[in-house]
Length: 318
Image (tube, rainbow, N blue to C red; front, side, top):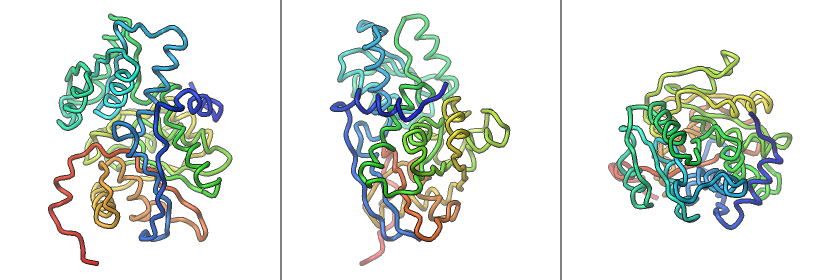
C-alpha cells in the first residue's frame, strides 16, 4: 500500500467543508525562525479529523458504510475522538476501542461525542485486535488510526495546505511520528517540493528502527508521548512513503519534549500534547539543525492534553 500526491488532492476535495483550514504562525524565538502549522486547532484538537472524514466519506461513496452499525476504530484517544466526531457529523454510530492507559480527558471526550467506548489492554495493539474483531463481527467500517490509504491521504492535506499558505516557500517540514499516517501524508503531499524530517521519541522509535531494519519492526512503547505516539510499529504505508520520499528520521529525548511543550506555552501561550511538542524539540535540541537560509515549518499536530502542569511555574517576565 502507498499513497501519492494525487490521493492527497482527492482527499482535499472530498473533505472540503468538513474540516478546518488551520493557520500558520511565524516563530522568531527559535534557534532559527520557523513557521508553526497550528493543526491542533483542527476539529477535536488534532489532525486526525482530516483522515477520519476522508475514510468515512470514501466508504459512503463506495457503498461500504452501513448506517446502522457505523464505524469502529482503535485508538490511544486522538483517532477515536476524530472518528467519533466525523461519525456524529455524518449521522452514523461509532465504537472506539482504547487502551486502559488512555488519558481520561480523551475517554471523556469520546463519550461526549456519543461514541461507545471499549477499554481493552494496556497498549494500542490489544485495543487494535479488539476493534478488528468487532469490525469482522458487525460489518462496521474499520478506520485504522494511521495505516489506511484514505486515513494517511486525509492527513496529508495538512502538507498540501501548508504549501499553499506559504506559497511554496518552504524547504523542510518537521513532523512527529507515531504510526506514521501524518508523516506519510505530508511526505506524499510535498514530495518534490520540500523535504520531511520525521521526529520520534527515543523511547518509541518506530520509523527509525524500521529504516535501520529495512522493514517495519516492533519497538517498545514508553515515555511522555506514549499516549499519542505510542504505536508499536510504523505503518506499511508510512514506511513505503518514507523510503520513497527519503524522509529523514531523528530522535528526541523525553526531557527535550517536555521542555519544548513548556516553551510553546511560555513564549506563545500555545498548549499542545507531548506528541506534538516532539516536532519542535528536534529544532530546540539540535536533532535537526537547519542550514543557513533553510525555510522550516513545524507541524503542531495535537492539543488533547491536561494543561494543569503548565501552570506549575510562572512564565518569565517581559
